[in-house]
Image 1 (tube, rainbow, N blue to C red):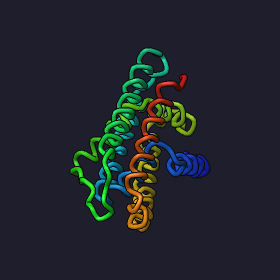
Image 2: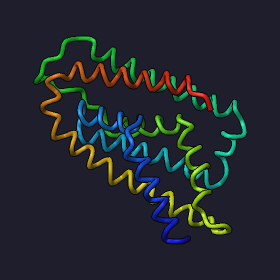
Image 3: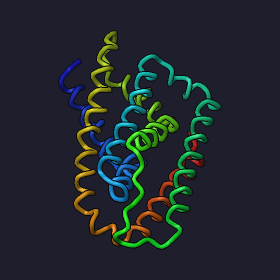
Length: 202
């Protein structure tokens, strides 16, 4: 694999990771409202979800998503329902008045990992991403390079999100003064992502 191709993929992967989206929303929301450990749990779960999609892409399973509209729609609707569930659950939890100094309920790291994992597994777009992007950079007859490219993509995420979490941590004390508003806004954004996922065409 040429150095130019490797650098090109790295740039594309970097732009993909740092572009704000659902994963960024989940990580920031958790970092601001819960804390650093839970946010890192979301990152770990999301990375594991991407890894599952990447392995499925490398062995050709995600081709089913492109070949079967039904399979794609089933995953998409499940993902949309899960996002709406997370948003509604958060809105319900924030319905009462909250004191500034009142500690937020802290879910276990395992629960945070589960949220990150399920959010990615129930989103068909990472699978389509790997299926459509990797072949453009893989040298002909050298599929082993796919492992390297996936490692680069996941590695960038594991470097970027801790930086984001640290930045969010610095702003956390100030933003928690408006915790109820922040909670409701981010929960509404989750619901909006879910509805958008449900409405998206292939």
